[in-house]
Image (cartoon, rainbow, N blue to C red; front, side, top):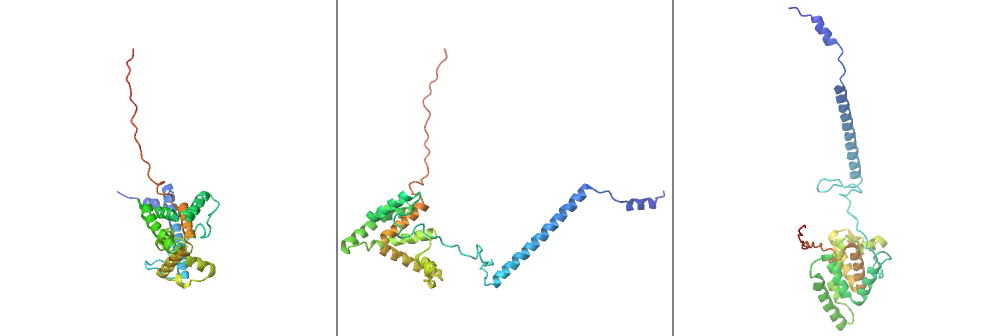
Length: 250
């Protein structure tokens, strides 16, 4: 049987019909190629920025992450300032104004109650108020009886100021002096040395301005933490239904 080779050649040389599926696949491939090119360009730009930052004086962390200026990894998180200053005894004119006045009265008349309340808000443990208020009261009475002023209780209470400062990442006295007048800069270079300096400043603040320190801590805690008695979980009380009487229809 004879086969027409010319016919087969004509069939192979014939132009193929365009298929819509083929055009869609070609378009998808072109989009993927463009995306790959954009990703490669972005990675090159990021590498150039990292190298520029490294040449400018920034190094690398132990995990191999770059210390670029303004990055979350390389830049330490700044400490926030206290909500009110040490000598702002009456607080600020805001929604906590009445609470600030209460804190001022407690710090002037009953500092042991204010100190116990502050520790109770920080630790939120049962029995915290009594465990700290009673020792403070004993030191308060001994200091006023033998020395004429409250000189012993600050040795017991200044640790609460340090705990508040560390809990909320607040600015210490040395950092405040360094920010305002540029002194105490050498103490802030080492983290351990800085913390020793800040703890000493916390103790000095409680000794020299004890009532003002307690009031400042009380104002700060009332703006940041609710009272432990208000944060208790609600109790679900199940009330049984009333007595039902089945009546007979007439």
